Length: 287
Image (cartoon, rainbow, N blue to C red; front, side, top):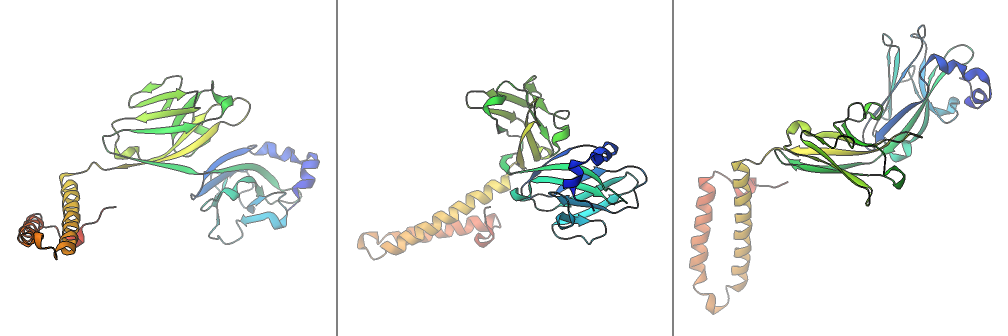
């Protein structure tokens, strides 16, 4: 492998014309990131690798001739001529410049990869309800196009956008842009379980890559009658325990002499309720 410091100085980088140029990836903290790099016809049997920095021998993270590790894995899809490197459980310090390399006599073939790592904000709602996703942006982007898409692929996000600021109402989706606070919001109504997943907020920029932030939406199933019954009897049990504690602390007072009878009747009533609903207090828990 040849040190890229020399390659950048020389004209040998013309070999990059045989493969895609800069590949831009947005990864998200805690998730795996699949980096895909195509290579020219005829190099199916050659070693491929992923490296950082100047791509010297000490900068190689993983190659197709090495065993996979818990952090890095590789696949070589020879029919498609695509080398895939997987970085597991991204951290913010994984961000930076990578290179996909193909070992060959003379100068290796390189494809530059820029990886940005971001945190993912999370939000929840329930089936048939609604949710509002908030997307902040910088002051320079106030007049720029805003959009929202599903998935984690920034390169196709605008093409696959479910809504944009040019058309702020699309079916169940509504986009509102508050330029004063520099936040645009997307409200999704009549939620279904299939709406769960990762969404990207995008802001179009002409001089650089679009600005993205990620939101993970978790849509819970609509509560059933059984859920409400469990909720009710859970809190009824809590109320019973609280009443027991109070009565026990006051049982020494003479003017509470008639309360034991009341407490006995209340306890019997609660016990019968649990029998009727076949719910045991110890089986009840709320997440």
